[in-house]
Image (cartoon, rainbow, N blue to C red; front, side):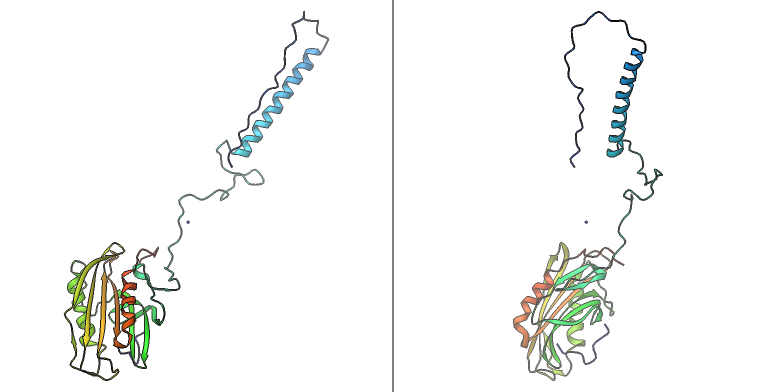
Length: 275
């Protein structure tokens, strides 16, 4: 592919408390003695004290374990607003981050693994590229004006009707625009082979892969005699069509299969906010 001289902009175990009363053996009953003055009152005070101690212990456990189910309190005993977890909250929408080693189309929540060396960054993410917007592209530089090109993006209009019900026809229209309108300038005898179209699925979404070979008699920018083009269209169901293109000339033939494989391993739903 000819490199444009002026590229487009671009988520304790509860302690089981169990208290046992001490087990004692009751002595043989004796004839009740006459209680000393005030004796019954003292015994009554002991029983009351034991009951009070137990009541305090139970109250303490309830407070520690939260058994009353009430609202948490602040240090001064007042009701604490915001001390417990808030109910019904959800994280704010976030823009998709594109990890290193991936090409990304944020508007479609798409990530495509980069094929690695010798591919290097060319444009984007978020660039406007040929036939695509929100695009991310890579290149292999063969000469100052001749490159292998790998691009993913959201299919732009460009006068084409992207019909999700007929991706085959759309793919043919796109490749004809690609071949005969751009980027093969200064050529003679420009032709393309009959496209091979494969209906498939990419990350469970309906897709079409088109492959063709573009040939020419002469080309101003390169001594190469052909270029292999793969064009992938995917309908991820997000009111937009994913477009992937691999255009690899004769000089980069060894890198064509890896580029197509990368496109076919695209995955979606990586974005928590789709505009």
